[in-house]
Amino acid sequence: MRVRRLLWLAIPLLPLAGCGARAGAGAPDRAAPAPTDSAQERRYETTATVLQSRDHGPELCLGAVFTSYPPQCGGPPITNWRWDRVEGEETARGTTWGIYHLVGTYDGTSFTVVSADRPPPRRPPTAAEQFGNEPKSPCPEPDGGWPVPDPARRSEPYLDPVSRAARAEPDFAGLWLSYLEPMGGNVAEEPGEFVLNVAFTGGLARHEAELRERWGGRLCLTHQKRTYRELLRIQRELQGTAGARLGLQVLGSGIVDSDNAVDLTVVVLEQRARDAIDARYGAGAVRATPALTPVA
Image (cartoon, rainbow, N blue to C red; front, side):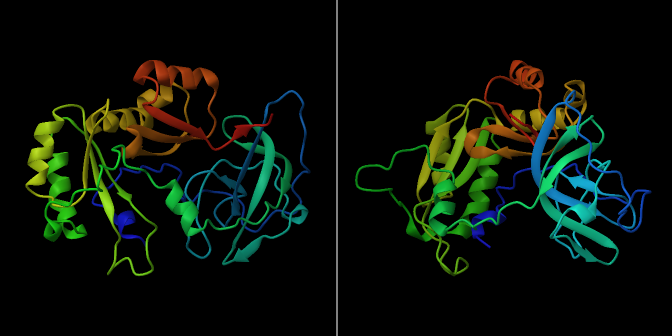
Protein backbone atom coordinates (compact mmCIF):
# COMPACT_ATOMS: atom_id res chain seq x y z
CA MET A 1 0.00 0.00 0.00
CA ARG A 2 1.37 3.38 -0.87
CA VAL A 3 2.44 5.52 2.04
CA ARG A 4 0.41 8.46 0.78
CA ARG A 5 -2.77 6.42 1.08
CA LEU A 6 -2.35 6.30 4.87
CA LEU A 7 -2.32 10.02 5.35
CA TRP A 8 -2.68 11.92 8.52
CA LEU A 9 -4.09 14.04 5.65
CA ALA A 10 -7.18 12.05 6.45
CA ILE A 11 -10.20 13.00 4.35
CA PRO A 12 -13.49 12.53 6.19
CA LEU A 13 -15.20 9.74 4.27
CA LEU A 14 -18.74 9.17 5.42
CA PRO A 15 -20.26 6.14 3.69
CA LEU A 16 -23.95 5.76 4.44
CA ALA A 17 -24.90 2.60 2.62
CA GLY A 18 -25.01 0.09 5.44
CA CYS A 19 -25.01 -3.68 5.52
CA GLY A 20 -27.15 -4.28 8.59
CA ALA A 21 -29.42 -7.31 8.87
CA ARG A 22 -32.92 -7.05 7.47
CA ALA A 23 -35.91 -9.30 7.61
CA GLY A 24 -36.16 -11.04 4.29
CA ALA A 25 -35.66 -14.13 2.21
CA GLY A 26 -33.16 -16.84 2.89
CA ALA A 27 -32.00 -18.88 -0.12
CA PRO A 28 -32.13 -17.32 -3.61
CA ASP A 29 -35.70 -17.23 -4.90
CA ARG A 30 -35.71 -18.93 -8.27
CA ALA A 31 -39.49 -18.52 -8.59
CA ALA A 32 -39.36 -14.70 -8.68
CA PRO A 33 -41.36 -13.02 -11.44
CA ALA A 34 -39.64 -12.37 -14.74
CA PRO A 35 -38.20 -8.91 -15.52
CA THR A 36 -40.75 -6.30 -16.48
CA ASP A 37 -40.39 -3.47 -18.97
CA SER A 38 -42.38 -0.26 -18.59
CA ALA A 39 -41.87 2.37 -21.26
CA GLN A 40 -43.57 4.85 -18.94
CA GLU A 41 -40.67 4.89 -16.44
CA ARG A 42 -37.18 6.28 -16.77
CA ARG A 43 -34.47 3.68 -17.14
CA TYR A 44 -31.15 3.81 -15.29
CA GLU A 45 -27.98 1.80 -15.65
CA THR A 46 -25.13 0.86 -13.37
CA THR A 47 -22.43 -1.75 -12.87
CA ALA A 48 -22.63 -3.02 -9.32
CA THR A 49 -22.78 -6.01 -7.01
CA VAL A 50 -26.08 -7.81 -6.51
CA LEU A 51 -26.16 -9.63 -3.17
CA GLN A 52 -28.65 -11.84 -1.37
CA SER A 53 -28.12 -13.29 2.11
CA ARG A 54 -30.07 -15.19 4.73
CA ASP A 55 -31.17 -11.84 6.15
CA HIS A 56 -32.56 -10.21 3.02
CA GLY A 57 -33.51 -10.78 -0.58
CA PRO A 58 -31.55 -9.55 -3.62
CA GLU A 59 -30.22 -6.03 -3.17
CA LEU A 60 -28.36 -3.66 -5.45
CA CYS A 61 -25.15 -2.60 -3.71
CA LEU A 62 -24.68 1.02 -4.70
CA GLY A 63 -22.44 2.01 -1.80
CA ALA A 64 -19.41 0.42 -0.18
CA VAL A 65 -18.85 -3.33 -0.56
CA PHE A 66 -16.90 -4.82 2.34
CA THR A 67 -14.37 -7.34 1.10
CA SER A 68 -15.10 -10.07 3.64
CA TYR A 69 -15.96 -13.58 2.46
CA PRO A 70 -18.73 -13.56 1.67
CA PRO A 71 -18.82 -9.81 0.95
CA GLN A 72 -21.22 -7.50 2.77
CA CYS A 73 -23.08 -4.51 1.39
CA GLY A 74 -26.50 -2.92 1.27
CA GLY A 75 -28.75 -1.01 -1.06
CA PRO A 76 -32.22 -0.87 -2.56
CA PRO A 77 -34.02 -4.19 -2.96
CA ILE A 78 -34.43 -5.61 -6.47
CA THR A 79 -38.06 -6.52 -7.06
CA ASN A 80 -37.65 -9.17 -9.76
CA TRP A 81 -34.16 -10.66 -9.56
CA ARG A 82 -33.64 -14.15 -10.99
CA TRP A 83 -30.33 -15.90 -10.28
CA ASP A 84 -31.22 -18.53 -12.88
CA ARG A 85 -31.18 -15.85 -15.59
CA VAL A 86 -27.62 -14.67 -14.96
CA GLU A 87 -24.19 -16.27 -14.84
CA GLY A 88 -21.09 -15.80 -12.76
CA GLU A 89 -22.61 -15.67 -9.29
CA GLU A 90 -20.84 -17.05 -6.21
CA THR A 91 -22.37 -18.59 -3.12
CA ALA A 92 -20.86 -19.00 0.34
CA ARG A 93 -22.33 -19.33 3.85
CA GLY A 94 -25.86 -18.58 2.76
CA THR A 95 -24.93 -15.52 0.66
CA THR A 96 -25.09 -15.31 -3.14
CA TRP A 97 -23.56 -12.43 -5.06
CA GLY A 98 -22.18 -11.30 -8.42
CA ILE A 99 -21.19 -8.17 -10.34
CA TYR A 100 -23.45 -7.17 -13.24
CA HIS A 101 -24.21 -4.35 -15.63
CA LEU A 102 -27.85 -3.58 -14.96
CA VAL A 103 -30.51 -1.57 -16.75
CA GLY A 104 -33.79 -0.98 -14.99
CA THR A 105 -36.19 1.40 -13.30
CA TYR A 106 -35.97 2.94 -9.85
CA ASP A 107 -38.98 4.23 -7.90
CA GLY A 108 -37.05 5.82 -5.04
CA THR A 109 -37.01 2.71 -2.86
CA SER A 110 -36.53 -0.34 -5.09
CA PHE A 111 -34.93 -1.29 -8.41
CA THR A 112 -36.66 -3.33 -11.11
CA VAL A 113 -34.40 -5.05 -13.64
CA VAL A 114 -34.96 -4.78 -17.38
CA SER A 115 -31.65 -6.40 -18.38
CA ALA A 116 -28.62 -7.84 -16.57
CA ASP A 117 -25.31 -8.84 -18.15
CA ARG A 118 -21.85 -9.70 -16.95
CA PRO A 119 -19.61 -6.65 -17.42
CA PRO A 120 -16.45 -7.03 -19.52
CA PRO A 121 -13.34 -7.86 -17.49
CA ARG A 122 -11.55 -4.82 -16.14
CA ARG A 123 -7.87 -4.31 -16.84
CA PRO A 124 -6.09 -3.00 -13.75
CA PRO A 125 -4.46 0.37 -14.36
CA THR A 126 -0.75 0.43 -15.04
CA ALA A 127 1.63 2.27 -12.75
CA ALA A 128 1.91 5.03 -15.35
CA GLU A 129 -1.89 5.37 -15.53
CA GLN A 130 -2.17 5.51 -11.75
CA PHE A 131 0.54 8.13 -11.62
CA GLY A 132 -1.24 10.17 -14.30
CA ASN A 133 -4.38 10.28 -12.17
CA GLU A 134 -2.64 11.52 -9.04
CA PRO A 135 -3.25 15.16 -8.00
CA LYS A 136 -0.63 17.51 -9.40
CA SER A 137 0.99 20.46 -7.75
CA PRO A 138 -0.64 23.81 -8.62
CA CYS A 139 2.79 25.45 -8.48
CA PRO A 140 4.99 25.31 -11.58
CA GLU A 141 8.41 23.80 -11.00
CA PRO A 142 10.89 26.64 -10.38
CA ASP A 143 13.79 27.19 -12.74
CA GLY A 144 16.55 24.89 -11.60
CA GLY A 145 14.15 22.49 -9.87
CA TRP A 146 12.29 22.40 -6.59
CA PRO A 147 14.36 23.81 -3.68
CA VAL A 148 15.00 21.58 -0.70
CA PRO A 149 16.22 24.00 2.00
CA ASP A 150 16.83 21.32 4.65
CA PRO A 151 17.23 17.76 3.27
CA ALA A 152 17.25 16.37 6.81
CA ARG A 153 13.61 17.50 7.28
CA ARG A 154 12.02 16.48 3.99
CA SER A 155 10.93 12.90 4.70
CA GLU A 156 7.54 11.45 5.65
CA PRO A 157 8.07 11.59 9.46
CA TYR A 158 8.14 15.39 9.27
CA LEU A 159 4.75 15.56 7.54
CA ASP A 160 2.73 15.05 10.71
CA PRO A 161 3.89 18.17 12.59
CA VAL A 162 3.69 20.41 9.51
CA SER A 163 0.22 19.04 8.74
CA ARG A 164 -1.00 19.74 12.28
CA ALA A 165 0.37 23.28 12.12
CA ALA A 166 -1.31 23.98 8.78
CA ARG A 167 -4.67 22.53 9.86
CA ALA A 168 -4.68 24.65 13.01
CA GLU A 169 -4.92 27.83 10.93
CA PRO A 170 -8.48 29.22 10.53
CA ASP A 171 -7.95 29.81 6.80
CA PHE A 172 -6.53 26.35 6.08
CA ALA A 173 -8.07 25.03 2.85
CA GLY A 174 -6.34 21.75 2.00
CA LEU A 175 -3.17 19.65 1.98
CA TRP A 176 -1.96 16.95 -0.40
CA LEU A 177 1.18 15.41 -1.88
CA SER A 178 2.24 15.44 -5.53
CA TYR A 179 4.76 12.75 -6.41
CA LEU A 180 7.32 13.59 -9.05
CA GLU A 181 7.57 10.05 -10.43
CA PRO A 182 5.73 6.73 -10.04
CA MET A 183 6.25 4.99 -6.74
CA GLY A 184 8.85 2.25 -6.47
CA GLY A 185 8.31 -1.27 -5.21
CA ASN A 186 9.39 -0.74 -1.59
CA VAL A 187 7.54 2.41 -0.56
CA ALA A 188 8.30 1.89 3.12
CA GLU A 189 12.04 2.33 2.56
CA GLU A 190 11.85 4.53 -0.55
CA PRO A 191 8.59 6.54 -0.43
CA GLY A 192 9.61 8.62 -3.42
CA GLU A 193 10.15 12.30 -4.10
CA PHE A 194 7.16 14.56 -3.67
CA VAL A 195 5.97 18.15 -3.30
CA LEU A 196 3.97 19.08 -0.22
CA ASN A 197 1.05 21.28 -1.32
CA VAL A 198 -0.75 23.37 1.29
CA ALA A 199 -3.69 25.65 0.50
CA PHE A 200 -5.04 28.62 2.41
CA THR A 201 -7.59 31.31 1.64
CA GLY A 202 -5.07 34.09 2.28
CA GLY A 203 -1.78 35.15 3.86
CA LEU A 204 0.42 32.82 1.82
CA ALA A 205 3.70 34.60 2.58
CA ARG A 206 3.12 34.37 6.34
CA HIS A 207 2.01 30.76 6.16
CA GLU A 208 5.03 29.77 4.09
CA ALA A 209 7.42 31.32 6.60
CA GLU A 210 5.73 29.49 9.48
CA LEU A 211 5.63 26.12 7.71
CA ARG A 212 9.28 26.41 6.70
CA GLU A 213 10.17 26.26 10.39
CA ARG A 214 8.89 22.68 10.40
CA TRP A 215 9.39 21.46 6.83
CA GLY A 216 12.61 21.39 4.81
CA GLY A 217 11.41 19.67 1.65
CA ARG A 218 9.67 20.75 -1.54
CA LEU A 219 6.77 23.05 -0.73
CA CYS A 220 3.98 24.70 -2.69
CA LEU A 221 1.68 27.25 -1.07
CA THR A 222 -1.47 27.96 -3.02
CA HIS A 223 -4.69 29.93 -2.67
CA GLN A 224 -8.12 28.29 -2.63
CA LYS A 225 -11.59 29.76 -2.30
CA ARG A 226 -13.12 27.72 0.52
CA THR A 227 -11.65 26.85 3.91
CA TYR A 228 -11.50 23.24 4.99
CA ARG A 229 -13.95 24.01 7.80
CA GLU A 230 -16.41 25.32 5.23
CA LEU A 231 -16.05 22.12 3.22
CA LEU A 232 -16.69 20.06 6.37
CA ARG A 233 -19.84 22.11 7.01
CA ILE A 234 -21.07 21.52 3.45
CA GLN A 235 -20.34 17.80 3.75
CA ARG A 236 -22.28 17.47 7.00
CA GLU A 237 -25.23 19.48 5.66
CA LEU A 238 -25.52 17.31 2.56
CA GLN A 239 -25.29 14.15 4.66
CA GLY A 240 -28.08 15.56 6.84
CA THR A 241 -31.12 17.80 6.57
CA ALA A 242 -29.95 19.87 3.58
CA GLY A 243 -29.43 16.76 1.50
CA ALA A 244 -32.81 15.39 2.55
CA ARG A 245 -34.55 18.63 1.56
CA LEU A 246 -32.92 18.40 -1.86
CA GLY A 247 -34.26 14.86 -2.22
CA LEU A 248 -30.78 13.31 -2.22
CA GLN A 249 -30.19 9.71 -1.18
CA VAL A 250 -26.57 10.04 -0.13
CA LEU A 251 -24.34 6.96 -0.32
CA GLY A 252 -21.13 8.59 0.86
CA SER A 253 -19.00 11.71 0.75
CA GLY A 254 -15.47 12.96 1.18
CA ILE A 255 -13.33 16.06 0.78
CA VAL A 256 -10.96 16.38 -2.18
CA ASP A 257 -8.26 18.75 -0.93
CA SER A 258 -6.65 19.31 -4.33
CA ASP A 259 -10.00 20.34 -5.86
CA ASN A 260 -11.23 22.32 -2.83
CA ALA A 261 -14.52 20.47 -3.12
CA VAL A 262 -16.83 17.99 -1.44
CA ASP A 263 -17.12 14.69 -3.31
CA LEU A 264 -20.68 13.38 -3.01
CA THR A 265 -22.10 10.05 -4.24
CA VAL A 266 -25.88 9.75 -4.45
CA VAL A 267 -28.29 7.15 -5.79
CA VAL A 268 -29.75 9.38 -8.52
CA LEU A 269 -29.15 13.04 -9.36
CA GLU A 270 -31.81 15.08 -11.11
CA GLN A 271 -30.77 18.28 -12.85
CA ARG A 272 -32.88 20.38 -10.49
CA ALA A 273 -31.02 18.93 -7.51
CA ARG A 274 -27.67 19.61 -9.19
CA ASP A 275 -28.73 23.21 -9.86
CA ALA A 276 -29.94 23.61 -6.26
CA ILE A 277 -26.59 22.38 -4.91
CA ASP A 278 -24.71 24.92 -7.05
CA ALA A 279 -27.11 27.70 -6.04
CA ARG A 280 -26.69 26.92 -2.34
CA TYR A 281 -22.94 26.33 -2.15
CA GLY A 282 -21.51 27.88 -5.32
CA ALA A 283 -20.30 26.30 -8.54
CA GLY A 284 -17.49 23.81 -7.98
CA ALA A 285 -18.00 23.41 -4.23
CA VAL A 286 -19.65 19.99 -4.61
CA ARG A 287 -18.86 17.24 -7.10
CA ALA A 288 -21.99 15.10 -7.07
CA THR A 289 -21.93 11.74 -8.85
CA PRO A 290 -24.95 9.43 -9.21
CA ALA A 291 -24.64 5.66 -8.84
CA LEU A 292 -27.60 5.20 -11.20
CA THR A 293 -27.25 7.13 -14.45
CA PRO A 294 -30.13 7.67 -16.90
CA VAL A 295 -29.96 5.57 -20.05
CA ALA A 296 -29.56 7.81 -23.08
